Image (tube, rainbow, N blue to C red; front, side, top):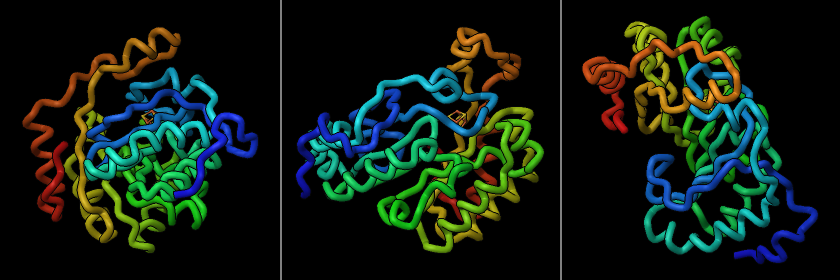
Length: 256
Ligand code: SF4
């Protein structure tokens, strides 16, 4: 293991804007994980539950060395628990220098690494950074390009480009799909996404995440227009039917 000190006084260590950390996360990758939530995101998802940190750059400035020192305190536990570190957000690729330094430092500590990303900024991942990522949690928000654009205010293609680059090098991916009734529940679109994911060859599982209204109040606090106020979370039957499409395409483990 490399030395990580001095920590907070290392002026060469990249600075990042950190929203929060979770030391015992269990839903953002395998095992028990240290999850680092960074501020900032290039998308503007209509259902974002953290608009206060994704759309507005809020958080605490920290050096990568400082964060890595904190991570090191949990390293033995995370290794024993089959976990590691997940860099999430926002989108970790919105702060690529910081994310790169965190991933490198984690690998120096022998930790399993994930990034949780939309892939829209996949071009910010250079080959060295890619080598330091063990697993990508890739959010494909919609399959239909028009629905995607309308839902997140950015084009779909960069995400597909990133997905195909990950496939080309055999990088393991867990696909995430947020199910929004009336928006992303078209079975034909989901079928095409499932076939696409199966064809990539590196997608290990698919998590269908039911839409919820948890972040709605934050939009209102920020004075932002929240356009999904009338949308209810999906019925269990709808969620099951969408998961069944992924299962039929070979993704046995497609619940959360
Ligand atoms: S990608 Fe995630 S963090 Fe970014 S706007 Fe969408 S939901 Fe919010």
